[in-house]
Length: 218
Image 1 (tube, helix red, strand yellow):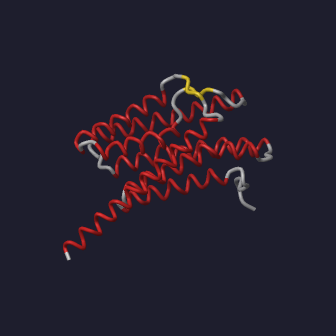
Image 2 (cartoon, rainbow, N blue to C red):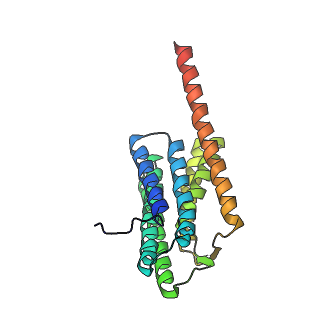
């Protein structure tokens, strides 16, 4: 009845995509960046575990091939377009910022295209990636955004922009990056949950401060 695959092996991938779209909508509406970062982390968690869930499902060769293509397509949105919208929402709109964002996007897309070719040629589950996977954006940018809470705004703007360029460069640098396995899933899960808790506490703290300020003005 419908084209595409809609079984449980791809549900988590679609959830990650929905999280990213919601995050971009938050950026457009000017909603607190703390919520956006939480959604980016959620997209990263979905990408971390969607492959694990898919491999536990009984799939045809066509469904496996579809899953590989779907994962890369969603990665373009979740870890390239979504972060780019974050950079713009943070005010990186000068000409050199735009060039930096373009470089980040091109590097990420090139990385995904190269990964797809590798997957098709080998047909095997790799133990090491070549270049930094774009998924790591879901970890790196929220961490450095949290660091910004303790750094002067003028300094932080340069740091965050520099990190964007470094991530783009690492995406295309031909270095081995070990694929998460076993304990790595536990580590990344705990780190993601910890960051989400910090962002939630930050949102709560800001709400209290805003409420107290309103009461004092009254």
